[in-house]
Structure formats: structure tokens, C-alpha cells
Image (cartoon, rainbow, N blue to C red; front, side, top):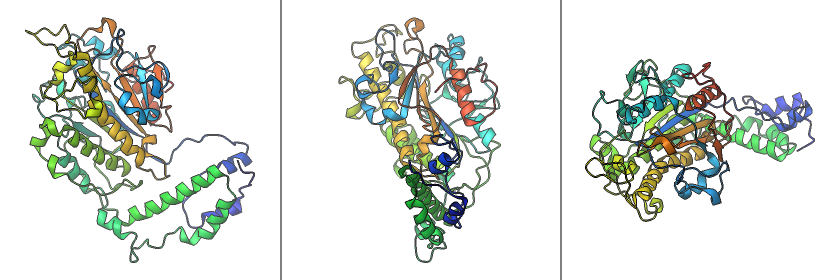
Amino acid sequence: MSNFKLTRRLFVSGAGTLLTLPWFESALENIGLGGLALADTTNPRRFISFYFPNGTYNRTDQVTWYPPVGPLTAGTLSPVLAPFGSVMGDLSIYRDISTRASDNLQNQAGQHNGASVAFITCSPNMNPNISFEHMIAAKVGKPAIVLQGNTADQGDAQADNAISFLNGRQVRGISNPGDLYRQLLGQVAPSAALALAGSPTSPVAKSILDSALVDLNQLRSRLGKSDQQRLDDYMSGVRSLEMKMAGAAPGTPGTSPGTSPGTSPSTPTPVGNACVAPTNDAAVDSAAAAANGSLYLERMRVFNDLITIAFSCDITRSISVMLDVETGGRSLPAAPPSLVYQGADIAGWNNHLLSHFGHFESGDYSHSTPDGIPRCITRDRFYLSVVVDLITKLKSARDANGGAVLDNTIIHAGFGVKDGMHNASNTKSPPTLVAGGRNFLTPGQVFDFGAYDVSDMFYTFNNILGLGMDNFQGGSKLMKL
């Protein structure tokens, strides 16, 4: 910590023609607030939810998801988490959190309908009015995006085809990345304009930073190491913002499939270095590709690229993703070799059958085959790799202050169905994972939340995101996340 005294004169001089500079610890110390962590209020807070279909194996006699309570470490990773040690510092596992709403609907189609309907609504009935991502959209005035991992469904009459609801109706998700690409295209600065921003003829070729460079360098030399880093990050953010503003394009009002009706995509404020024009991938731009299991991971990674752009450009602040529909019959492709557990691959296996641990004989789902649980673990790793891919991309993307987009984003992921075999007697809760949000969460932990319900979790998310609800479907306990 530096003993430098930041005076008003030096502050104003150093700022020059810039926008307001970041707070420095040096300044806080001089007014008796040294070491105080200020909340990040300069960047938008975001939410995304991933739904894993059909339940899994995570019973008390053989826990496949839950490490011991406490910090996540390489030595304590569970079988499902083991391949993803590189991101363990950015995610947490919420153990044993109850699912009151879906439990009350457990007799609905073997839990499947009730589990998917209640996942982000916590609805006590089969006709929810609105789900959490659309509540955020209504509050911030930016449309929610809804994505669907599979198109092989049975139409709107099937409640297990959606987790997203608005005004009492299902919101059908976008399943073709090409459709999301076209939706975003008119709202993001063209890449050609961004390239011109650094050219000699660009209107911002001479940065506003140049006019204050001498004063800023003098200021930097008197700051402590941590404040120097804040100043460097801030100047990088200002320069990035200049470049994006040079290429900003007007938004296109209206609504699109998979977005919240009643909200219009507006001209984004380009903020991070990932706010660039989207690109299309012709290989996955078709309805046929959306139903082609062999292209599943390619499609979902393209979706993650587009999600990163949508968040970075502040086009949306809330997204829901149904990785596959409940009771879906589509066969899965081979998993990447690094994700295969004990040699049990999933190539050609029916997703629903996998959740029952691989055994099906004359309608009997009550027993598992010897490799049924290992194959279920491979399936879980396969889906989790999509979430980890987004964690990695949002961690590389930058907000205006130079911080990671991930650090201002809540990533919620998990199952709706408590137990793949529908044997809830020795399964306390479906696995629930939360990642990101380092500016307001404490990632890298395993929490015992047996005293809470998922409605309390969403109530706590509501509090973090500033939605102003006094409860969420009866949940009103604040959780220390």
C-alpha cells in the first residue's frame, strides 16, 4: 500500500478529458476507508440458467456429483467434476438444496413435467406465469434469450419441452445458432468498422487518453501496485470503448423468437473486448443440424460464442438454455475421449434411457446395468462441458473496467428431476451448480444448503440482481453464497 496522498488537484489534472476515474485504495486510505471493498456498480449483472434433462445418479450410497463441503480442490473432485479442474475456482456446488415445488408435482409424468416446469419458476402448479429470466428482462428492459438444445419435441402441448414461461405461456427456445446469429447481427457494431477504428483515418485514431497522458503517467508513478493495475485496466477499457463507439450501429426494434415479447433490442453500449460482430457457422445453420446429434457440441459451442457477444454488448442480461428436452428420445453422439468415464461411452444411447442407468426391459426401469452408472457419469460430463465452455469464454471476455464478464454473471446449472430412476428415498436433491459472479458470490466452494429451498436461492439471486422482489414463490431466506 502506498502512502501517497491523492489530492483533488492531482485527481482532476490526471483525469484530463477522461470520464470519471476508478476509485483507488490510496484515496480510500486517506479518508479512513483503506481496505474497503467497493461493490462493482459500473458493469451490468447478468444471469444464465442451463437445464440438464431427465435426472441422474447422485445417491447417498454413491455420490457422483458432490465433493465434501468446503473449498473445491483437485484432490476432492467428484467423478463428474474431475475433468474440469481448470475452472473449479469459478464454480460452486450447492449440496442438498430442496426442491419443494417439483416435489409437490412428483406424480406428474414420473416427475418429468413438474421438474422442468418448476426449474426456474418454482411454480406450485403446472401453469406458471413467468420464469426467472423473463423477470430480469422486465426489470432491466432488455429481452431475455431462450435457447433449446433439441428440436425433436412434441409441440407446445408438452410441458416437458420448456423451462421458460411468460404471461402464462411456454417460450419456445431457439435451436438453430444461425437464427440467433441473425437476431444479434443488426445490434452489434460491424467488425469492419471496428477494424477501421485503429486506422489513421479513424475518428478515434487519436485517443482522448493522449491529451492526458503526461498527467496520467505522473499519477501512476505515485500509486501503489494494486492502484496502478486499476488505472491500467481503466485506460484499456476507455480505449476499447472508443473503438467500439466508432463502429456502433443502431439496434433493430421488435421481437424475435426466443426473446421476451414486450421488450425491444436497443442500441447496445459496446463495453468489453468481446463486443464484436457475430459470425455465422454454415455447418450448424439449419433445422436439420439442430436435430443432428453428431453436431450437438459444435452447435452448443457456437451458441456460447453468441451468448458471449450478447452479454458483452449488453444486448441481454438474462438467458435460459434447455440442453435437451425431458424424456427426449434423440440419441447422443460419442463423448470426447477425455470425458468418457471408465470406458462407458454414450454414442448411440438414448438420453432418457441413460438417466435410468442403462437398463430397459419390458418397461422395467428399476435396475441398472453394470456400466449404467459410469455411462450416466459420461453423459453428465458431456453436458457439463457445454457449461464449462461458456465459463471459459466469459472469463476471457472483458467488461468496461477490464474485469471478466464472468465475474458479473451468475451461471446456474443443474437437473430438475431429483433422481434418474425416480427413487427419491435416498436422493436428497438434484445436483445444482453455480458459477461466475466473483464480484458478488464466493465461487470455488461446496456449500451444504440442506436448510434451504431453490426458491430461497432465486430469492437471493433476485436480491443480488436488484429485482426488488420480497419473495420468490414463497422463498424469502437470504443465502450466503
